[in-house]
Image (cartoon, rainbow, N blue to C red; front, side, top):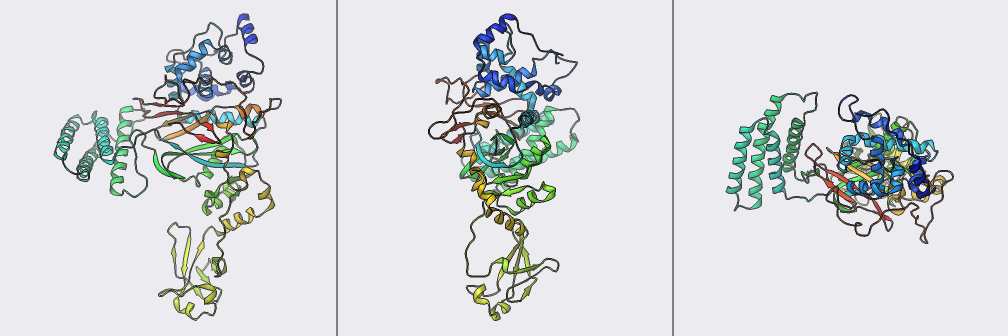
Length: 567
């Protein structure tokens, strides 16, 4: 339950201490002056019951504690301990010298209470405030993605199936305790009977047993009926385990399908390729080219399609901010006709897309553009005047492949300009792409002076994520909840230094920005692995019993010109 008013007027002693010990240009004083944290209050008010429960701690203060925590790279326990003795922290938190702080575990509960959607709402509100200061323009967005390694140990397939079997039995126990006991005894018999067999035979036995368990679990699900309107954690865990078990069995039926579950600890992580193969997620980001402030972000599984995520990023920003984005710059991965056509279409916002085109392959033979398509009648006419309606859809469903008769090509006087050699059974084949107009427009746009005059970040390929000092993303909290991931940037150096009257950031001899705000950087804590809330390090892994199977705080550090994701 929330109080009507949490503000406590500072005493004269408090005011005197803060004025004497917190300099006027202190980073936290600047943040407090420029960021209206009170506007976050309404976004989190629905987390609390208005009439029941004990009086909650001020949610705005909890948000500012989270800001301090991730800005200064402090664990839950450390940020509370530091706020106890740090006068600047107390000033920033609107705490008097005698005010008490919450217990560290409350920060964890608060993050869980916010969840994914409210973290996203906080991010959108921060972007809104930046727009109100005139920092973010709609002229150009830069989009790129990088990979985030999942904090998991990938088990063998044999162990994964065994773990899945046990999880399903554990979650089904409240509904079929006798059947669960029978199958647990059966699992032990399977283990003993296959102990001396090859791993392939052991795997077959365990998969067969898991199929039998899934079969009766499906019948239990049908008996239970639809999900209740009121949240039921026991039922939710059972449903999630059964769905995951079906996915694990599907992976065994088609091992090469490319969407395999890697680990039950983080069942949404996938194997992907971003330069090299990795297990985890793709972090897809859109930012304003003028202010270098993030405007939208999304986290995809490691095998996700970052190209098709571009319309999603732009739509998310435009829905949250009510703006209209004029142009988007994306690297070579954006050379996708479907995406280019979707974004440039009026219903897609009419966005001008800048993407570096692949080089044209020089050939002495007629290219696809020399063949005229009659879309109404579904025929193609070659330069020699012959027509064909023989066609097949391309594997990626992006166009038609037309094939001419061999007899026409054999008698054609232009054969030497069309084919290096005449095929044995068929004539010339040509592909007419559904998105050729979008490709042609993008290639023509890349040859204009406007393309050449764009900022260096967007001139050839948007490598900003790796080449530019990302002050806008120095600190972030990565929340993973039931397959949904949200990044909430909490570092505001670029926000603050961009405002009128703010001191400019310096640069070293290499042109890299120099951090202008103080930072707690104890040598004994930097670079250590974080395995719990109370230990200092960039990455914290938390396992919960209340539905949050996997939570991760990930601080993204800029090191030697690129992001570094500590493991």
